[in-house]
Image (cartoon, rainbow, N blue to C red):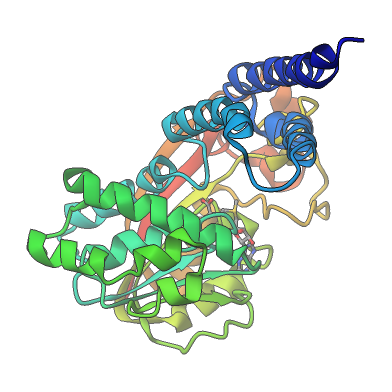
Length: 352
Ligand SMILES: C[S@@+](CC[C@H](N)C(=O)[O-])C[C@H]1O[C@@H](n2cnc3c(N)ncnc32)[C@H](O)[C@@H]1O
């Protein structure tokens, strides 16, 4: 074979094939079911990139960077436009904006308050907290049962803060003067965050991440003034005890906003299940993931704990599949359609 073909065309052909695969994966799967993408196709994409990397020996040459550029640029553009990208600013925006809007409706400000992101997740643990801080919170605590990848958390924070600087009108909601909002952003060490050094990146800001369970929280009691959570409370299997712990963490007069997802989470992973499937399981059944409580049961538990329920909005509802009512088991069988059709609630509770 001609040496040119051997050395030049073969890798080029390999690269074109890889590009096609990556392009297909990205442009066709990202819009599809995210769970599928995150598992099978996500893994395929990751291994394709690994294969690509292992074919590159040593530092990137002028020739090789041009191979990586199309992958980077298509991923970058696609991800930055996606509201489902859990490391991206748009995901944080969709998380935090409703909290601010609800608090504002009730004349509540985060300025001068200690904020807690309950069940912050493992992907972007400081995202919501950072937005609360730059809008005036004194300090923040992001807490979750699971730890996070610090390097990735720093990089995600770098991207978020850049957006907060570039587009302050989309992120600055409090009455804090704009100059102070910008100063608070500058208190982060951007260079360190860009390099994935979380500790140095956060050295001059009062943001904490605490890995702990709600049942034995290693957070001092009565210290949280404003708390929020998204898709977390449905995971507290002993809801009554969890509510009592929430009560203890909150300071007198503190406010919490919780968005609670009442859907059978198995339906996110498999087409075998729909949003209500778990209501047809026995009373003793558990998937160790969701507590299956319905909206009014959660409401009652909040009140029993002593919370004042200030707002209780149904943010998602749908009709159960035809004929499913006959399959309902235990206490679910006697619940109203309105109760069962409620699939998500957003509530504002106060420790009075
Ligand atoms: C569906 S995720 C939501 C994460 C994040 N709030 C978001 O919107 O992306 C639920 C989170 O609750 C956390 N969680 C579940 N049970 C918990 C517990 N007992 N104590 C503290 N965190 C818990 C999980 O570790 C998980 O990160």
